Image (tube, rainbow, N blue to C red):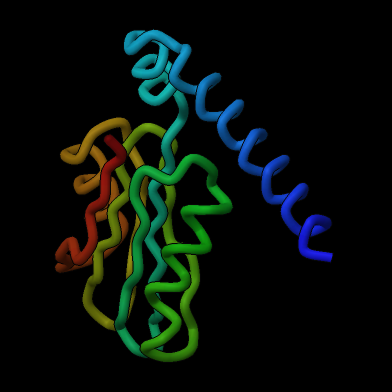
Length: 132
Protein backbone atom coordinates (compact mmCIF):
# COMPACT_ATOMS: atom_id res chain seq x y z
CA UNK A 1 0.00 0.00 0.00
CA UNK A 2 2.81 2.38 0.77
CA UNK A 3 4.41 1.75 -2.63
CA UNK A 4 1.34 3.26 -4.37
CA UNK A 5 1.88 6.52 -2.52
CA UNK A 6 5.58 6.69 -3.31
CA UNK A 7 5.23 6.58 -7.11
CA UNK A 8 3.18 9.80 -7.38
CA UNK A 9 5.67 11.54 -5.10
CA UNK A 10 8.58 10.39 -7.25
CA UNK A 11 6.74 11.43 -10.41
CA UNK A 12 5.97 14.85 -8.91
CA UNK A 13 9.58 15.31 -7.86
CA UNK A 14 10.76 14.40 -11.36
CA UNK A 15 8.31 16.84 -12.93
CA UNK A 16 9.43 19.57 -10.55
CA UNK A 17 13.07 18.93 -11.35
CA UNK A 18 12.30 19.10 -15.07
CA UNK A 19 10.56 22.45 -14.63
CA UNK A 20 13.40 23.86 -12.57
CA UNK A 21 16.05 22.68 -14.99
CA UNK A 22 14.11 24.29 -17.83
CA UNK A 23 13.87 27.56 -15.93
CA UNK A 24 17.58 27.68 -15.28
CA UNK A 25 18.38 26.95 -18.92
CA UNK A 26 17.52 30.54 -19.86
CA UNK A 27 20.41 32.93 -19.97
CA UNK A 28 20.49 35.70 -17.35
CA UNK A 29 19.82 38.21 -20.13
CA UNK A 30 16.73 36.33 -21.30
CA UNK A 31 15.42 36.04 -17.74
CA UNK A 32 15.89 39.77 -17.10
CA UNK A 33 14.23 40.66 -20.40
CA UNK A 34 11.22 38.51 -19.57
CA UNK A 35 10.74 40.30 -16.25
CA UNK A 36 11.32 43.89 -17.35
CA UNK A 37 9.54 44.01 -20.70
CA UNK A 38 6.09 43.13 -19.34
CA UNK A 39 3.37 45.56 -18.57
CA UNK A 40 2.97 46.59 -14.94
CA UNK A 41 -0.13 48.04 -13.31
CA UNK A 42 -0.82 50.33 -10.39
CA UNK A 43 -4.27 50.91 -8.89
CA UNK A 44 -5.55 53.31 -6.22
CA UNK A 45 -8.77 52.53 -4.35
CA UNK A 46 -10.57 55.02 -2.11
CA UNK A 47 -13.57 55.05 0.19
CA UNK A 48 -15.30 58.43 0.36
CA UNK A 49 -17.21 57.05 3.36
CA UNK A 50 -14.19 56.25 5.54
CA UNK A 51 -11.44 58.27 3.86
CA UNK A 52 -9.17 55.23 3.66
CA UNK A 53 -7.17 54.31 0.58
CA UNK A 54 -5.59 51.16 -0.73
CA UNK A 55 -3.10 50.74 -3.53
CA UNK A 56 -1.13 48.22 -5.53
CA UNK A 57 2.06 48.62 -7.51
CA UNK A 58 3.80 46.54 -10.14
CA UNK A 59 1.07 43.95 -10.57
CA UNK A 60 1.27 41.95 -13.79
CA UNK A 61 -2.46 42.32 -14.57
CA UNK A 62 -5.04 45.00 -13.94
CA UNK A 63 -7.21 42.44 -12.18
CA UNK A 64 -4.43 41.55 -9.75
CA UNK A 65 -3.73 45.21 -8.98
CA UNK A 66 -7.43 45.92 -8.46
CA UNK A 67 -7.79 42.96 -6.11
CA UNK A 68 -4.80 44.06 -4.02
CA UNK A 69 -5.84 47.73 -3.86
CA UNK A 70 -9.41 46.95 -2.85
CA UNK A 71 -8.14 44.36 -0.37
CA UNK A 72 -6.02 47.03 1.32
CA UNK A 73 -8.93 49.49 1.51
CA UNK A 74 -11.92 47.31 2.43
CA UNK A 75 -10.78 46.18 5.90
CA UNK A 76 -11.27 49.77 7.06
CA UNK A 77 -14.90 50.09 6.01
CA UNK A 78 -17.40 50.22 3.20
CA UNK A 79 -17.42 52.24 0.01
CA UNK A 80 -14.04 51.34 -1.47
CA UNK A 81 -13.83 51.88 -5.19
CA UNK A 82 -11.09 52.09 -7.79
CA UNK A 83 -10.37 55.75 -8.43
CA UNK A 84 -7.46 55.47 -10.86
CA UNK A 85 -5.11 53.02 -12.47
CA UNK A 86 -2.15 53.13 -14.79
CA UNK A 87 -0.27 50.72 -17.00
CA UNK A 88 3.47 51.43 -16.92
CA UNK A 89 2.81 54.85 -15.41
CA UNK A 90 1.52 56.70 -12.37
CA UNK A 91 -1.87 57.16 -10.71
CA UNK A 92 -2.81 59.93 -8.29
CA UNK A 93 -5.72 60.70 -5.96
CA UNK A 94 -6.39 64.22 -4.70
CA UNK A 95 -8.91 65.26 -2.06
CA UNK A 96 -10.47 68.71 -2.28
CA UNK A 97 -12.90 70.92 -0.45
CA UNK A 98 -16.46 69.79 0.18
CA UNK A 99 -15.59 66.11 0.16
CA UNK A 100 -14.75 66.13 -3.53
CA UNK A 101 -11.98 64.00 -4.95
CA UNK A 102 -10.21 63.77 -8.25
CA UNK A 103 -7.96 61.16 -9.73
CA UNK A 104 -5.81 60.81 -12.80
CA UNK A 105 -3.09 58.79 -14.46
CA UNK A 106 -0.09 59.87 -16.48
CA UNK A 107 3.24 58.55 -17.70
CA UNK A 108 5.07 60.24 -14.81
CA UNK A 109 4.44 61.34 -11.22
CA UNK A 110 4.41 65.11 -11.82
CA UNK A 111 1.81 64.89 -14.60
CA UNK A 112 -0.40 62.49 -12.61
CA UNK A 113 -0.25 64.79 -9.56
CA UNK A 114 -1.09 67.89 -11.61
CA UNK A 115 -3.96 66.18 -13.43
CA UNK A 116 -5.54 64.94 -10.17
CA UNK A 117 -5.19 68.35 -8.51
CA UNK A 118 -6.79 70.02 -11.53
CA UNK A 119 -10.00 68.11 -10.81
CA UNK A 120 -10.54 69.50 -7.29
CA UNK A 121 -10.64 72.90 -5.59
CA UNK A 122 -8.16 73.58 -2.79
CA UNK A 123 -6.92 70.02 -3.03
CA UNK A 124 -4.00 67.95 -1.89
CA UNK A 125 -2.65 64.68 -3.25
CA UNK A 126 -3.21 61.85 -0.76
CA UNK A 127 -1.98 58.95 -2.91
CA UNK A 128 0.56 58.87 -5.73
CA UNK A 129 1.68 55.47 -6.97
CA UNK A 130 3.90 54.61 -9.92
CA UNK A 131 4.95 51.37 -11.54
CA UNK A 132 8.57 50.39 -11.77
